[in-house]
Length: 224
Image (cartoon, rainbow, N blue to C red):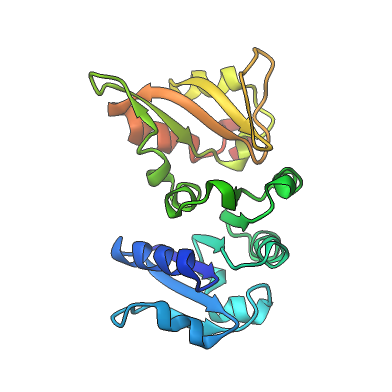
């Protein structure tokens, strides 16, 4: 059962904790103020950890070493980014997202390879899209017949540096555009996937599981 660690027991952190627990996942939520845990429902069974979210010992108590994903959603940009970097660089957590109140700083953090969500376009759904591959593949748009959908793709880091046409050929999707440093870009034949890119592609609805399987694994030359 995947384990999730959340830093910040504010409104969004609590919503994430409840949503993930309802989906059958184990959850640990961190906050410096133990009074913040009062926002959690009475039947919440996850772990409540009092401490600083970017402190290694605190993260270990929250189970970061076994975590599938980490969300830093406290009220401080610097704390969120620092915690996200510790989770990724020290504990090698693959799925990370950080909440950013200042959208002008998002580009800098994206360059660090940390997916961010600015408060001006904030929602629990957007965080889940960056933590749960299956959530992203629900899709943003479906054409009338329901056979085609536009969805965000989740790619293994091994695809970094590969040309987008190679990704299309391997997965059978048609990449519509990418979001890089918060801006949409129409792909060119020589455009390559970069760390932090969000890839939006049209795909056949019936092939979602197979596409997810292919892109969640590094290309053959990277996996040897």
